[in-house]
Structures are given as structure tokens and as C-alpha cells.
Length: 91
Image (cartoon, rainbow, N blue to C red; front, side):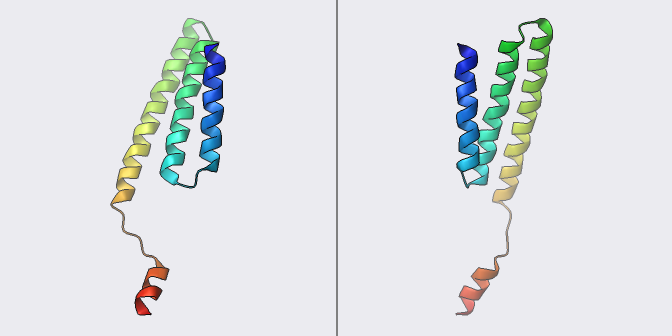
């Protein structure tokens, strides 16, 4: 039962990641998919090795999530040059 629920959540997050235009939201949905996959591994492979595999995947997903959060914070401070803004200032 839990495997089906987590599978549905994974599919919904994948669809939302494909549909959304915002890059920050897309990265967060991909992060949720990573956590769902680690839960699916732990629930599907019911052996000690499955637990180790799920833990390793969860830890790597967490490190990836932290990298995403750090990258998004750096993007907030970034100044970009937009050619269209300069054209509007001239008019």
C-alpha cells in the first residue's frame, strides 16, 4: 500500500516538474522525486542491503538538495544584463 502511495506522489511530482516554468520550483520537485525513490528502495527491497542502499541514496539526495538550495541562494544575488531593459531606457 505504501509503495503505491509513494509511486503516485512520485508521478505527480514528475508531472509538476515537467509542467512548471519556474526553475526553483522545478528543482524542488526533482528533490522530492529523489526522496521518494529512496523510500521506494527501502520499501521494495526488504533486506539489510536494501536498507543500506536506501540510506545511501537518501544521503546523496540530501547532499543534492543542499547543493540546490545553495545554488538558488547564489542566484538571488546575481545581477544579469538584459538587453531589452537597455532598449526601454533609451526610449
